Image 1 (tube, rainbow, N blue to C red):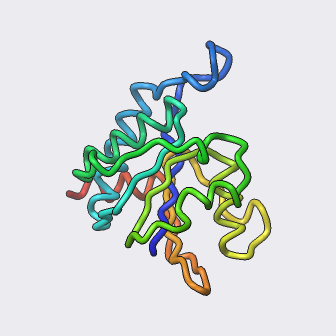
Image 2: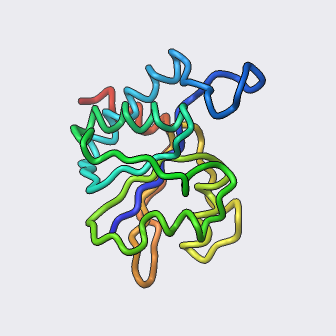
Length: 159
């Protein structure tokens, strides 16, 4: 199975209300649309897209699913809420017999999940807003690639 980890796009600043309700900014939407086009150029066709239920992650997942033509494969998962341990988050994909799963979530949680899977120290991988990585679940698990949002947007501009 290929596991893709995507951090949500740029959201409204903290402190303007309930953190769970912070939406993407117009700039975040613009940048993520380009990044999603880059993701499409990579040929990603996830069997399932699981997202944190927080507004900014849901919006990122919906936008990405729309660009990938995968809207019907999208589902919410409380196991991707901020602060859920990496082992519990991994339960969201365990037992699923799928070729690939895209998880849309938050930092530092995605980085901690990647570190757990790869046997690395916490902080080994850091996800910028809109960043994406691919981990091939083994054994052994291996990092195939890690792309910044800027790299994804450059890919998105090309096609």
